[in-house]
Image (cartoon, rainbow, N blue to C red; front, side, top):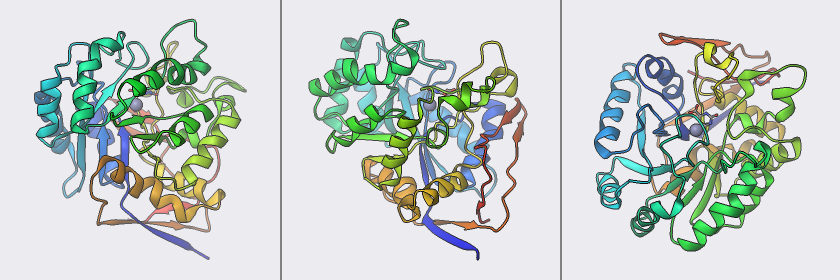
Length: 347
Ligand code: DOR
Ligand code: ZN
């Protein structure tokens, strides 16, 4: 029997679209299923001013396929010289919905990020005052901290002190990967939320490393051991308002993924919704998928929920998804969950 599920149209609360030929190639994959997305500002050079965010938004809208209904929600990249007045003006424009903090050196194009958190304190105070959310890449960058411990160390040594100093600051812990992240987000009160990616609900570190290196499963924060994946599954499928989808879909051309120093990022824009239906069904939580993809995010960001809907259908036969999408920048491999998926988004 075919099963079908209709949801409010989902949003993606953490997305990398890049620019130029890559933007043109990947944007239709997101716009096909999602109404809005929080757009990451880690371009080269990064999006640090309102003028840059406006120009980037215009390029995104120009790259949309004809007739597509998609709203990019822009972010500013926080640097140690960001001016609080500029951030306030960007928020007041209505175009910028959050500020992104990368610890310097934590990930792709993060070298202009923050090393000394005292330097950004005036910006954080302004954001707390005006209610603008801070999106956080939560990993310490100390090379002596084991890569699998970097999220937990960040929570203890940076995030918790930062939130104690700025209790009114609204914070999104992005792409959490650990049970410590889940526990901290759950206990955090109404000013704290966490996004969870599709891929971290599906893979653990064995998928990357056992039986040969799988570069297309390498992302940051890196997937952790199985117990952490299970904690993420429990959080996402709980329906709790604190947790919502941020795919962190992060395209890199195959030549840079299959490389001696491969880039971090899983590209999940194409098949996220069918994969999530599979995951939520497996955990007996299909009735909570809509909260995760379409309700909890807008509630935290204080935006209306989408009026349009999206219908997923479960077919008898496994569905075929493209292995790659072919952009003018080069081929990009679509995340392969490693199991058959019967769910499909109806056109
Ligand atoms: O895997 C990742 N890719 N994690 C990040 O934090 C950045 C992203 C990218 O921009 O490629
Ligand atoms: Zn990201």
